[in-house]
Each structure stands twice: as C-alpha cells, then as structure tokens.
Image 1 (cartoon, rainbow, N blue to C red):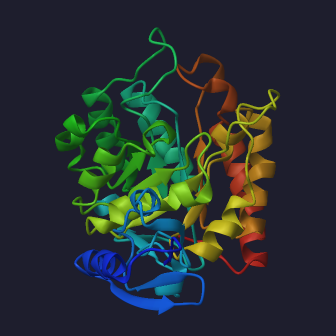
Image 2: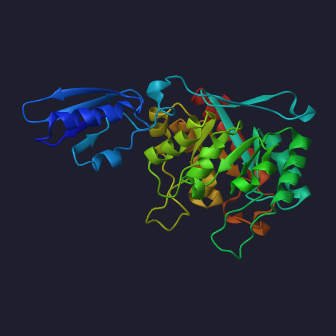
Image 3: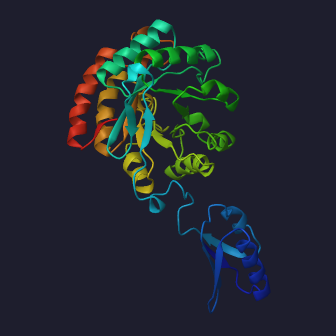
Length: 346
C-alpha cells in the first residue's frame, strides 16, 4: 500500500502518522520527494482501513499495490487448494471425495427436501450416475413469504437419512447462525447468494471446521466474493469453495446470467476451488447440460445441479431441475469432457 501525503505537511505530523501505522503491524518506509512525500507500507495490510486513511487530513491518496485479500490470494498460496470430504458409513465404501486441483466434484439433488421417499430415491439415482455429493435445501430463502420455505429441521433429518442410505456427503444451506447446532452432521455448509456479505455469519463460520460453499452474490464483483471468503479464512477455516451461480443483468430470458469468465478469473486470482451452478444461472432445465459443459471447458472444479424426480410437481424451482434420467445422460457426456480437460471425478 502507498500513501501519498498532501504537499506542505510538516515532517513531525508525517512521522506521527507513520508511527500510528506501525502500531498496526506494518513497516512504513518514508520517501520524501521534491514536491511530495509518500509512505510505503510493507507487510500484511489487510487490517489497514484504506477508506479511513483516505479521509485523514494529511492524506491525498491511498493506492493499494496488492489485493486486499491475503489468505485467498494465489500469490501467497501458489498451489491449488483441494477440499477433501470423506464418504459416510458403510454405504460410502470409505471413499474420499475431493474438489480442486484436477478433481471435479459433482453435487446433485433437489432444490428442497420434500419427503423421505423423494430425497432417498434421488440420492440413490444421482450416486449411481456418478455424483460425489448430495445437495438439498432444508431451510429455503424465498423472495415471497408465501412460497415454500423448506421443512427446516425435519428436512435436515431426511437429508441425514439419505446420507446414511447412500454414503454421499451432504451439502445444504445455512440461513442463520441460530441454526448452526442443527448442522453438526452436515458435511458442507452452503452460504447462499443473499448471505454472501453477511459478515457476522462469515466471521462465525471462520471458527467452523466444516468446508464452506460460498455462492457469489447477485451483483458481487470478483473482489467482493474473494473478500467474503477472506472473512471465513481469517477466522481459521481455509476450506472454502467458491461458486459462480449467475449474476443479475438486464436480460430477462434467463433467471440470471452465467458469468463464465468468473471461473478463469477467480482461479487466476485465488487458489480456492471454483464450481458453477448451472441450474440457478439459467433457471431453465434445458440449458443445464450446455452450461455444465462450459463450466468444464472454463476450468471449473465442479458443478452443483438441481435434480428432481418430478420437476413439474416440485415445491421449489421445478423449472430449472433436471430428472434423474437426464442427469445420468449428462454425466455420460461430462465424463468425456473431463477426460479432455485432464480432470477426474472427485
């Protein structure tokens, strides 16, 4: 970070400002030019509030010479992070599922858990087709207060039954930290787009020992997504999976617009695994296969797909859900694409 000091500032005040910055754990190098003095900050400047510095009466301009996210930054962690999650019980065959560094994770299941028969049968079907993880919503954030909100704690119990029957690790969304005690047996906690900048939640999840699947917000920049990951990692939890799920644009034909450029951009900036959600990105089931193939071609580390045994009667997002049979066909195609890209199923 470089701080340009206003012309005419007394040396004593510059030294005082530098001393205050050094108390925050950085080294300050003072460079006095003919017309202007600049302060060069060396060290971990993540805790330095650039906005507050810009408002300081001595400061003309603040320039960051390095990205504000440190722990998520590939410059500080050149090797790809791999998230490893063990299968569950005898049904898993002691399989360890991985996401990142060539391992392609496929997360599949219904938007929301509805009945014991529904979630168990879908779990068995997606596992047979090659899915590595089971997704399912127990607590559902909905735009309308009159829409189905999920089965809550009962939905989690049904997910655990499906987990026991298939051995698949489960991925489900946490909406409020008051629910966290119910997630003891959940394998991957999902933070939805609406909560991507719920900083109090992110801080607390930093103390959690479970992998976090962090979805990009509707209008979040790459930096904002990585800074959200930084909140989690700063608390000590480095197991973060980034998810591109489409952003809101002027286009109304699709539910959102898949920003496929997010995959190579995020992987260039960060060592964290990046997956794609083709279901939410389009909101149209017939687009899911094409967007899934695009995800692999762009270098993604996985996909999260909505699969329902009867989309027409689904209680949530049936129009973007594919059937188990369509998912099985999709997996046949994706295996060929993975082979071409040097990837293998997690």
